[in-house]
Image (cartoon, rainbow, N blue to C red; front, side):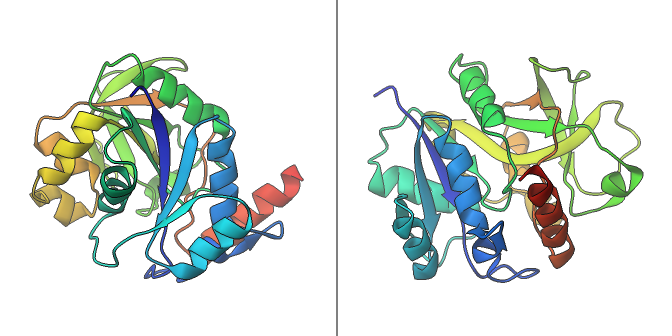
Length: 244
């Protein structure tokens, strides 16, 4: 089956900002902003969550949500449960879209899907430039180092992901929380043990790199804000209220 699915892992039990998927932005829950952006790509979209409150919010807004185990260690494990159990392993391309980026642009998701359909790598993701020194210094903002300078419309191979600024890299960018897997790559990824660097840096994508899986990175000229703290929530509300 030639099919693309976008799965948004989401849960209420976040250490730094509990209940963040249900926080309101322009009178709409954060998870619904992400869901609506995904739907605009004309893909099939599901929210994967262990929380009934999130299920209810998504269903009330005519979306699709699947209840998942409370025991998953990572968002990708949650995505895989929906792929394997609910979708019977049929999609050939699976997009793991983080549920805390309410201002992500639909075109960026579509561009990633279009690239992945060419079959050039195991996993695809996105990155943007840093807009300030403060943004670069913030350890909540994940950095991705690539082999060559990123330019619009071109993807390049990732060589490292990290939180603390590493001056040894010439080309590194602000990583965006979205991953597109081929079905074979997703099955292989979840079969691997959590890796040393993954656990040290708390970054799932390092498991792929440490096991010689290829990750290609595309450039976008906007930086969707990943909401991890109350300060992030205040900032994204300001950004999205201005657009309205």
